[in-house]
Length: 465
Image (tube, rainbow, N blue to C red; front, side, top):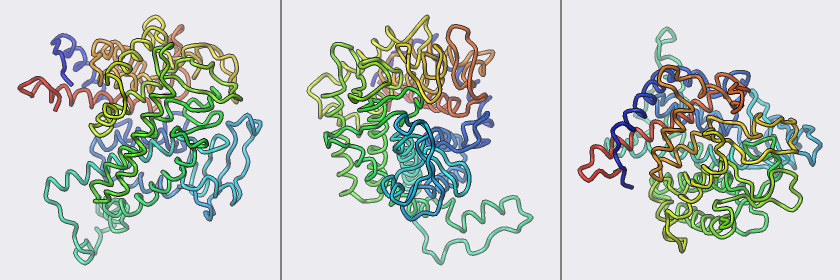
């Protein structure tokens, strides 16, 4: 993809971005919980924070947290307490303890929330698709990069007898890290052995969510990150999470020489993209839009939501999926994504504030929302970072700078990006503060944009490598 180099534009982006990265690094490394009032681990949010940790160089911490989260994968025979249904109108928004038969139905999924040792929650009636899919994506993406790096360094896996047989003194500053290494919790190769079978189980669970076997995953009310908007059916955002999971896990499996399974996953990628293009593209709307179930009480049919932009990120995510998109659709690769971005700008940007939902939602639950509150036409740094990444991937750099200006000011980099969400009329923040998920999402996008700009500037043909 070729980049037009407007020196003033990149000067603006660089100034705001570098200051933000410098001033937020230590904050995101303080934990993988979302921050503020939220002290538990949310698997979907952790997928962003852990990726940020990796990009920030906290490799041992990343391995520990990946190991921890996948150890809470739902299993039929597990003794861990699991509740579900708090976000489900079918269950009257009342949590219920999951018995063994319910755990068997959920088997392979990750919970929405890990509260403490021995206690987790599935928020909806079924596990949310994005919590499981995004953690598959992040885990695979990180482990794949570690393997690629070690391959570059001509790394050879040592025999078991050559591994470190002693640990540091208890008085040593690296005692804990050395202990965890001995246990295998921070050894990437042992983490791979632990998590890859679990991720394949998770893929099997997600495949089961394609109820009508048409290649698109289906969900019931509040089984995604917009946990008050009662969305049901075939949701564009959830298909995007699924594509990211499939693509990144396939890439890891190719590195591990598991070509047969990797090719099976890539066939699922191809099928999912075809089905999204056939079923979830609306020529009338000029965008990809959700296809709700007939019993949905949530967002209006064909209403536009900002998280549609994650699908644009997914189809431009690495060459693997990008080439699949070009090969599997009878259309100009850029046509629909660019049209979608233009539609989002015209329909969801209000006074240059990108809102998370196009229309005011009259029915929400279990939390009753006012307009411009939470998911009801508010501004979300997390979702805006996703849109910014999509716009950067498709050469909408002026739009990126506008969005970045909403998140990060050169003199006050924390004003908006630290909020969970913001009322665009009063410009007052709501929810948790500081909200680590949004901060990490912004940081990840900034780091990708800056890296691609540097690569482009370094290229003799002014191309991204």
